[in-house]
Image (cartoon, rainbow, N blue to C red; front, top):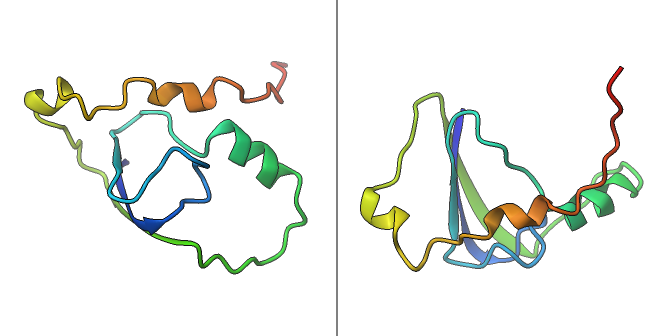
Length: 97
């Protein structure tokens, strides 16, 4: 699945400080994505119960088609080149058999 996500206002609880209003992200087929390390650790240690979140509004489109960005945008100054660093501190919780 490809996923295009955008932030309309407020904050996104899966990306801490890294997803600002007006921002968007595109994850094409077979591209790793998910919450940043801090959000993952925080969510892993809370009681599992429903929580009302009213601090932001985001949207997401998913499709089984391959989505691509234009060549011009790939060289844009607006591209967040250090995006991958939000997962650098993920704890290693799995051991191979």
